[in-house]
Amino acid sequence: MLRIALPNKGRLAEETRDLFGDAGLEIRSVGERALTARLGDDFQALFVRAQDIPEFVGDGAADAGITGWDLVCESGRELDTLLDLTFGRCRLVVAVRDESPIRRVEDIVAGTRVATVFPKATQAYFATRGQRVEVVPVSGAAEVAPHLGIADVVVDLTSTGSTLRVNGLRELDTVLTSTARLIVSPNTMRGSEAKAGAVKELTAALESVLRARGQRYLMANVPKAAMARVKEVLPGLNGPTVIDIMNGGEHAAVHAVVPAAGVYRTIAALKALGAEGILVTRIERLMP
Image 1 (cartoon, one colour):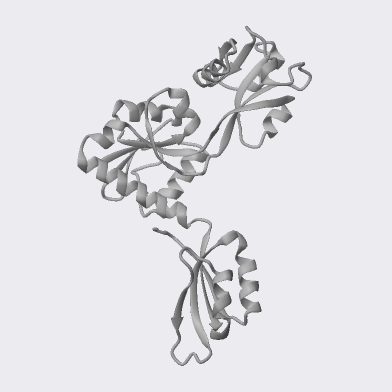
Image 2 (cartoon, one colour):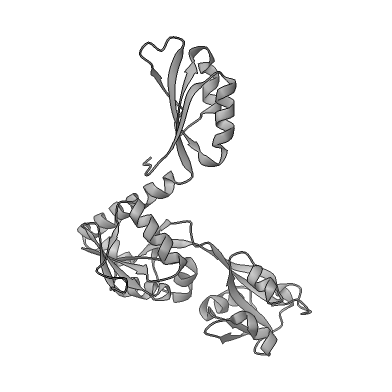
């Protein structure tokens, strides 16, 4: 049974549970505080802290895991990313106090103290730029460090930048952009063929759900005389599917997968062509 390390709490854990549920891998645990659970018939979930998941996967305690890319980078472990899950988006940024004379990262002089929860990623960032700074590791709330005189610069996570602004901080640069990733150890894919096959099946299942999100399945009865213009309105994945309707007369049924964000425009365009009986429905999974 494939062991998958999953975040045990927080927004990342909630979105991961939703994703697995949509993929038909509902988490079945014996209690809210259970450390393990079944995922369908072939997988076992291990609930651990998101920051520990790269270590679990890297050490072989788990065959795969889901955690933030920022935590993977900070761990320094050699892990393979199989899938970008797109949720949990945030940025690791360099920031200073609003009144700081530092206007650009290039203005940070040698020996400047930089407070961060991500010392490895921060050290690597400044080393790549050829800047020598003193990294000050903190366990949390790095945004208060400049106000307490602990450091002049911080490297901290932000989603919208609002927390930094509320704390009187100004962004200078982005160290990295992070989303949730499905990760494995290289040894997992090079070792047992059974495990490698199970990982590929898991990846395909999750990817089919992600591909379906933001898409809709649209059906409409369109005048045959307007069929030449339908493909401009419904490009779909490989063009629309056209089906004859029994006793449909001048109409044919047209089916296509369309982006959800612009479906209202698509409906208006079809109505302008004389379409009738338009139906739009959600898609649970979508395989290429």
